[in-house]
Image 1 (spheres, rainbow, N blue to C red):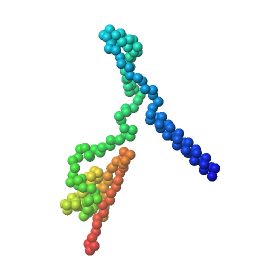
Image 2: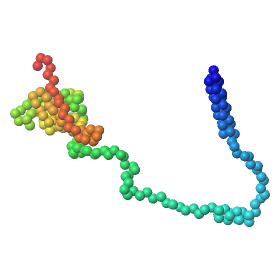
Image 3: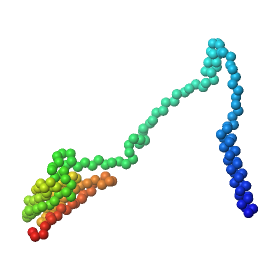
Image 4: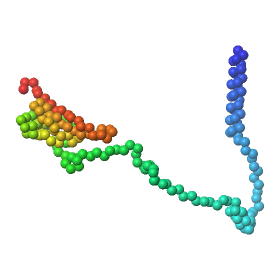
Length: 183
């Protein structure tokens, strides 16, 4: 019980102290100055006041700031440098109809193999139903992929893509021949 009374007294004293501080802060501690009426100032008094004011003011020295860029980085360049890797095909070769579609949208419909692998051909169909004949080296897909291999049941498309670090990664995408039942 004695502890509770002491705690209550301390908290009451703290609350009163906070209110007193707020009161002093809000009312202010400044003394009020009386407003005195001044007599009109003559022209000669004005001149002397101006001369006295000029003498009291220190001379202003203009210091011009000059930013020296030597040995410092450009503040407007980003911290992370983006590597500009552009494939030659993107600049010089116009887009073929096969490059307007993603590889996953194309369907492999037929393959003709030959002993000479450069003479092997494959046929793909776009979403509209139009067929295209492929050979090794044909550009295909939105990422400038190339047909790199044609075998008896699939073709392999090689794409060079840029990862998030700016490195060029070679990706091989297989397209397999879908054989329907009864064939």
